[in-house]
Image 1 (cartoon, rainbow, N blue to C red):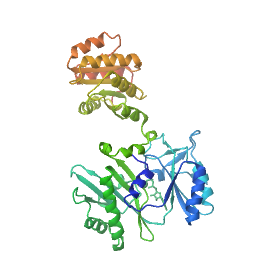
Image 2: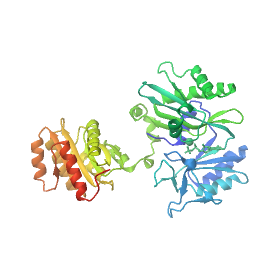
Image 3: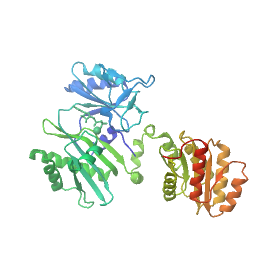
Image 4: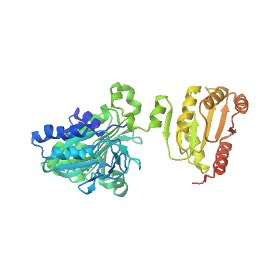
Length: 419
Ligand code: GDP
Ligand code: MN
């Protein structure tokens, strides 16, 4: 589960991680008032307006008008997802700039061309930045421990840095029992060539971060950048947290942090029906029971030259409602040109699944060819049910047959099945 930057910072604040002073606003009026009352009156001369969306790359992203689609400009330059406001009447500027951000679309390298609508802005004091660093903590599965990675070159695309100059990223594993140790922080600082005066604040910050990572049940905790200010302080300028979905049951308090509007609507709808659905960008919709079979099915489609439009696991208890919802989810993706149902009747019997499919398709009009492979308990009866249903299916007995049917269907539709 992804969090917004302001939510990640609220959580980190509880662990004493140093942060810039900030306030969240939802309207332009509020942006102006808050900038005046909470910043100007406290002697803060410059603020940063930060669009809150579930995607990074905001600093380099562009704002587009929600209705007209035109790029938004500020003094002749593009409005970006992170804007510095300094000099003159900063409250008035924050108000006018917020009008160019709130309600409009932010497109970044991570959002795709459609972008995301900006519904909140985080206003923060602007800091005098001397250096931008990177810190990330994630689980290293091959070592079975969390891994902390730090670089003295933050602010940039960290994937690019890791690929091009891996030595610039210093790594330490965190012992699950002892936790992150001060000597490890010193080792990181020395390897990065930081000054000795940086050691105490950096050590303290990294220890707080690793505690937060552990106790909050994060899958990823990332500060990009972590900054050193000209007066020698270290602060989390940006924060990204991905919570581990498998640990959500331990944190009922996290349910209020979920932002459904930021999630893929199909994925959110599917998760409400306990379907495990991940949208992909191919054209063959797949409905499968069991994650292993789903992976194998996707591989087969790929091998046959098709591209899966989704991962969709209906789970063991595939009743009519589930199957109907699964069809609805799969078919509401406009990219789907052919649908494949590949279900193994182990716990759930094939005849019941066949009834489910027929009933589901009486509720929703299938607009694409459907290839069905039902194998396992009562498979013959299932075949009879499908044949007598009056609906047109393309039946396959084996996975190879299924992929051949998919290829035929794509060829008939004049969609090139080859990648
Ligand atoms: P991202 O682009 O979505 O990762 O958003 P960030 O929060 O990382 O901000 C992008 C960039 O904006 C940072 O790398 C900084 O260079 C700049 N920035 C953000 N806040 C401040 C600030 O308070 N002062 C200054 N000078 N620059 C800032
Ligand atoms: Mn960032």
